[in-house]
Image (tube, rainbow, N blue to C red):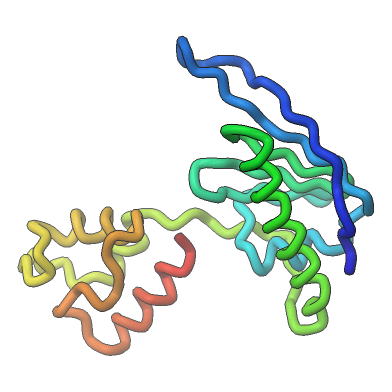
Length: 171
């Protein structure tokens, strides 16, 4: 086990909207986890990675999570309970990935975010409406949101269906 625990502090962020006071959490880690970061980045498809100092960013739902060797910061949380749930999940992922590191090719590269145009490159672009959407662009937008997938486009051949399934894993 690489990460045995953490201590949390919850802070108020600067209010961007009147009447809304977001919170953020800083978790101080019991261990230095710098060695797992490239493996974590490879498995969890980080949206940002820096080598010096080592750190990575994750996008989980509407939250950004910064992971550094000795701390994890989570933005826009409701309360300490929510922060603790997210941190326990991350601790489990960190330890699981650390245990499987021999099977993982570490990377310091970041995955480029999936865009509608990436999905459009695979779709037939016929705007046939067989999927129930008026255009392939609408279908692609819904696929990006997770509301459509490769099974929902009847016009895709088997190879395109596989390519779209692989592409949608980047969401």
